[in-house]
Figure 1 (tube, helix red, strand yellow):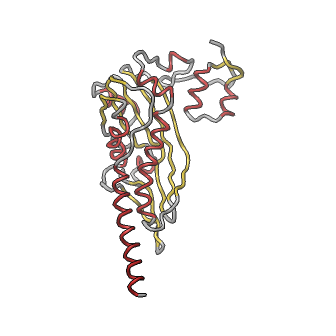
Figure 2: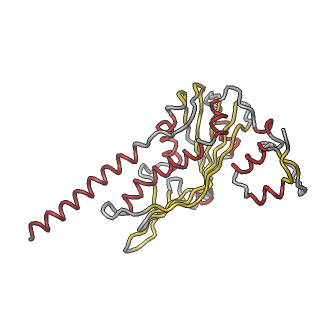
Figure 3: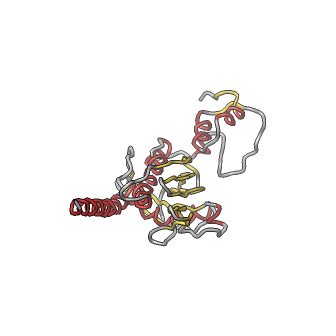
Length: 269
């Protein structure tokens, strides 16, 4: 009886070790994004940390969230490499996008850099199109299960610093725990794939892919009456809006009710 109990405990322990090793491997080997089209043009990409508690210095750039143990906490959680979280995200981009963009360039940005300065640094690489992913929120909490709060936006620009496309994703996801491996190991397994999922949501937007793969991508300012790169005079009077402008506002995360308050009808092309 004692032998069987010992054997069972050993099996559970070894299973946990195997799962942990598989977890480390799977977290590093993220599948490429599933995207339509490809481009031989050079594309540069960077991730900008705009989380307010990072920009203010309250938390270091390596901060990813918190974890709680049964005996205490919460405790701050940091990247495994102890590098900035956005640097680790940038390092994953060739794995996610290399099959679609054969001339992909990546750069690191310091937290809190202005958007203009970030775009200029991207263009300094000599790329024909640049992609800036700004993280307004990105933090996890691991206890019995793992939760992720995220707010990320993608903006694509041409060499003239004109905005070509815009997409935003935000929300709160919860992932179940792992009975054998434990919650921390489960977080290490699920969070990298959660990052891939959010990048899939950003890059798979038709307007984003069209702006990056088309030879003659037209800037948003020319496709719609709104230009986000220049001051806009707001008006309280509803107006006729182009479909392009409505879709732009939707992608930017504007609530439907606010869009309706701005547009009394759809302008026909």
